[in-house]
Image (tube, rainbow, N blue to C red; front, side, top):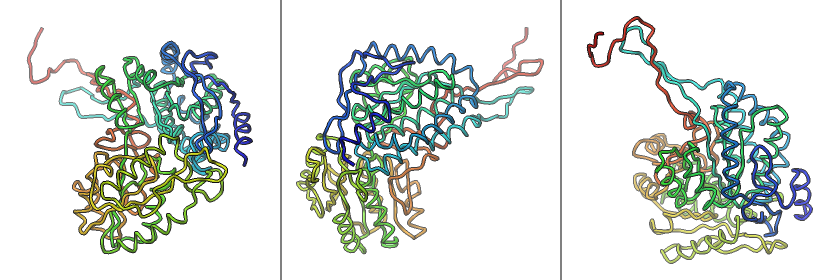
Length: 514
C-alpha cells in the first residue's frame, strides 16, 4: 500500500489529527504547554503527525487527576476492576488491525509484529481478569494462643509507567492492566519516538472507560525523559516507577526513586546469547537463532546478539547461517515476506555502523552484511543489512547492547567455556541453549549455568510469553513484570495479626500485669 494513503487511512480510522494532544487527564488537554514533537515513520522518514507534549503544569494536572480517581477506584472490588479490563480487552480485539497499523507505521515493525503487539495487550487483559479473583496472601501459624496471622496485599496508589519505542503499547499494558486490578491508577509516559501509538491506545481505552462509567484510572503525559520522566521519578506521590529503556537512563531513574524510598521495576539492556551444542537439532537451532537475531530488526530487548557454537559443528552451522542471512528479505515492513524492517531513526543507524567498525578493530570479521541497506522508493528510511560478525574472543563491543541486527559469533570447546563466554557480559536478560543432551540442558539451567532472568532450551531468546514473570538480572535491572506473581510488585504487603482470645500473650515471654 502507498504510505501516504496508509497515513491518511490510519489517522481517519483512529480519529487522529495533526497536531494531536499528548496529554490525557480525564479528558484531552487541548493546548499542552510542552514542545511539539513530530511522529516520523522510519519506513520512509516522513512525518505522520505533530504532537503537542506536556510540561510540569500538565504533569501536575495528571497527578491531581490520578489522586482524585484513586479514591473512587479503591471503592471497587478487584473483580469489579477486572470487569473493566475485560471490556478493554474486548475492544482491543475489535481494534487490533487498526492499532497494528499505527504500530507498524510509527515503529517500523512488520504487519504481523504490529498486530502481535496488540495481541499481547489482549492476552495480558485476559490474564489480569483472571488474576482479579486470585489476589491472595498466605496464612501463617501463630505462636500465640487464640491468634490468627496472615498477610494481605493492598494497592500502592499511583503507578508511573515509562515505556520504550520498541514495544510501544504492550509493555504499558503488562504494567497497567495488572496494576489496575490490584487497585492502582497509572500515569503513562511513552517514548517520544512512539507517542502516536500511545495516543491511539488511550483513545480506545478511555472510550471504554467513559461508556461504562468507570473512574478514569489511566492518564497520559507525553514529553521528554529529561523533564516528565524526571518529574515522575522524583515525585513521592508516584509510589512505583516501571521503566523500560537503556541501562544509562535506568541508573538515573533508579537513583532518583531510591533517594525518596520509592519502588522501581527496571527493564533495561539485554545482551542475549544462545549456546549451540553439537548435540542440537541443527535446523531447529538455525531457525531459532536467525529469528531471535533479526526479528524487529534486532530492536527487541530479548534479541539474540551473541551465539556460542560448538567447534565440532562451527563450520557447518555458520555456513548455513550465512545462507539464511543472505536470503532474508529486508525492506518495507508492510510488504509480504519481509522479516527485517527499518531501525527506528538515524541515530540507530549511526550506532549500527559504529558498532560494526569497532568490532572490526577489536579483531572481528564481518561474515555477512555490515552496511546500510538501500531500499528502492524508501530512500528516507533507516535500513541496514542484517550482520554476522565472527569474534575471536570477548571484547568491549560484544559486552555492549547495540539495538540493531548485529550477531556476534564465538567458538567453544567445552560447555563450561561456553557458559563462561555466555555470562561474561554485564547484562542478564534472556538466554538459550540448543541441545538434545539432558546433562547439557540441566547444567545450563543450574546455579552455575545461565545468569539471566529468562532461560530457554531449544527455543529463541526472543518471544517471552505473558504468563511468566518477565525481567533480568545484573545491569538489566532485576525487575519483573507481566505474569506469574509479578502482580505483587504493584501492592504493599501487610502482615495482619488478630487476637480473638481474652488475653494478650506478649512476645519473647515478657510478663506485664495490670
